[in-house]
Length: 136
Image 1 (tube, rainbow, N blue to C red):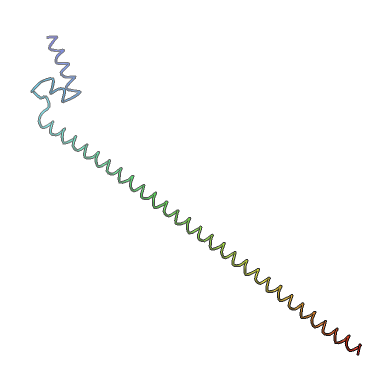
Image 2 (image 1 turned 60 degrees about the horizontal axis):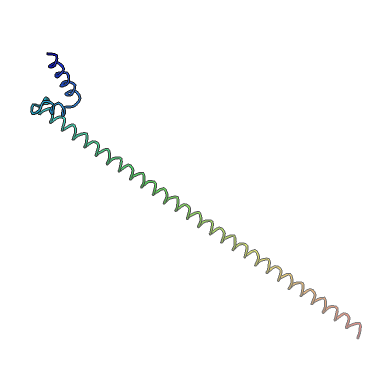
């Protein structure tokens, strides 16, 4: 009697822990019904399907994050290029303004020198005429 009780306790422990082990323990007599086995198989397949869907969703999310990051990098690169182009144009504009300023200064200097030469030439003519008049 005691031996049968021990055997029953072992069987209960095994059955409680694993339906597969319970079936092995009892040989060809499954303790789990065909309906329960079918239900457990469907549940296992459902869990696997849900896990595949979860993995697919995670992969899509990863790809979307990568796409967004790539778009952001491209946007930042376009902004950088636009900024560099604006800076280049501003440098060219400043250089052109400086050349124009220098040209205006050069023209003004040439004009002052021309006027100075004219004044000197008029003065020299006036002096030579004046001096010539007294000498005659």
